[in-house]
Length: 309
Ligand code: CA
Ligand code: CA
Image (tube, rainbow, N blue to C red; front, side, top):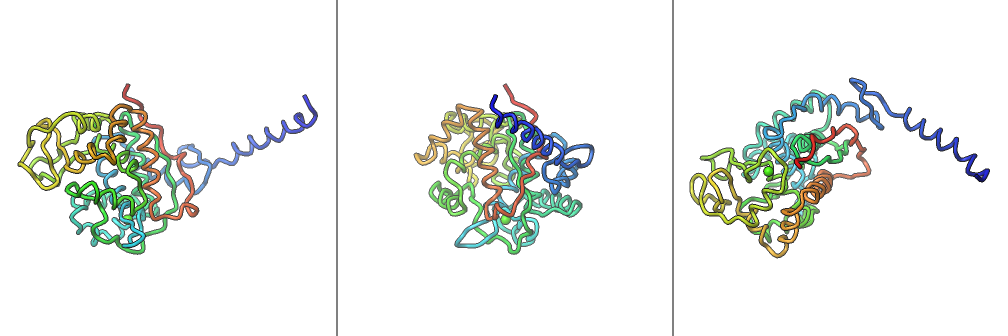
């Protein structure tokens, strides 16, 4: 062994020990690399109930609707919590119908712990997907400032929009077609309530408690044959069964040449679907934000409940 190698060993040891010692101990003995992240363990204790079916869908929907409210041309601050801070405005938009309850719940929690609404919304969605069997672990960045303006109306894609309109809208916000399809994995554990108001909540696949490929597979390969509730609502197409609901936009994206390859790939691979969802969720959570002003609190996010296979 060379002398230079020997002299390097203690340095490596010292830096490793220093890194270990530099972790901050938070409540209940849990540790983080960045002391500013400790508060998120308190938030976690308040939201963590391990009920995928009850909590993932509304938290996921709120995270998307808040973040996609961003356009370099039209305004909106993206993942800034505007949907909570300016809820009197944004909850009046048709696309945000049904979010009142989750907006109130997350506002209460954010105020209790003194965290920003933008951070709260993305953290709740991040934690909740891990409660769904098959759901991936997603990174979490904190430090979003409070929203300064309501997002303008018309930035949230609707189920009755054309593929061209939807792709243009998400591109304007900074997401690719692949991001969009990856984010739609959330429909594997999602429900409709406001497209057909006679049958709320109706899931988008037969396994709404499991983050699996069933949603992609069925939308692509199983033809719709019936209306599960009232017929032919705006944004709805026929479904393969009485117990699942098919959105017009999902059916169109599954077969459109610009997106069908992603859809097909996710229908075949749980691991690709889960990892792509994690990547695109983390990207979406930064829309409209200056990432250099944020800090990594991913070590607060619990490990997912596990895989389904
Ligand atoms: Ca927003
Ligand atoms: Ca499912």
